Image 1 (spheres, rainbow, N blue to C red):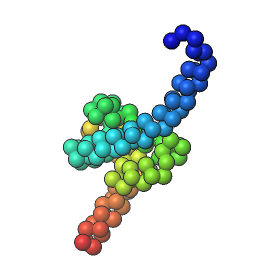
Image 2 (image 1 turned 180 degrees about the vertical axis):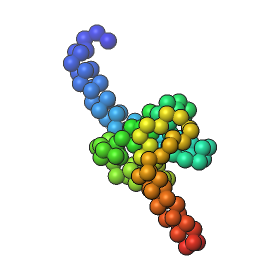
Image 3 (image 1 turned 30 degrees about the vertical axis):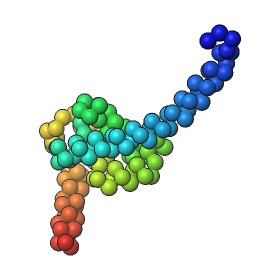
Length: 126
């Protein structure tokens, strides 16, 4: 409308953007987290390929979360991290381009073997 100074609008926009951003990030995490759980149900793992476009480009989000957790980025807070790791989110999957398992390095093989042993021990407790 006429007579309103653009500075105020600019300020308001900035204010809304700053508030809205933090909200949408949190909402988005909830949504994305659900998507990841669905993905896991569907495929049996959480190695979401970078180019996987299902669930509104879940692949890109998963890569960002993997990088965030690995590099301790501030955009992944402790709660997010705990929840992701709680559903066995795979943060080692650096370059996941497809669903075919790539040949593993010895280090990964050793890690997987250790995980399998740990899982077997878990099973035995039940």
